[in-house]
Length: 73
Image 1: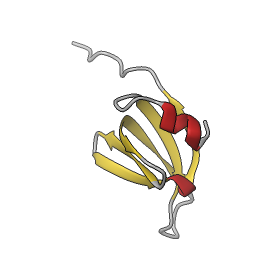
Image 2: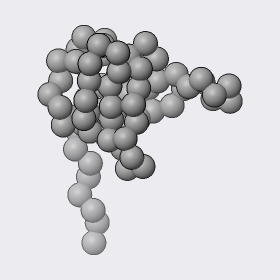
Image 3: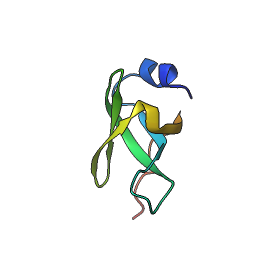
Image 4: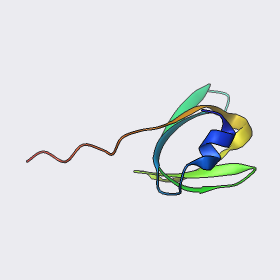
């Protein structure tokens, strides 16, 4: 999914975004959660561990994903 397609998704859509890291140890990582904000420079994904702000230039791939499975009893 290109950045323009990501921008077209409604806020609240569940997505996975693979993005480059600049810490020198890892090449890329994924952010899985709800899209909470997006503009020309960055997007924000609310993950289980908190919100992750990702620069659009660092996005390697992105796609919409289905809702999480229901918890088991």
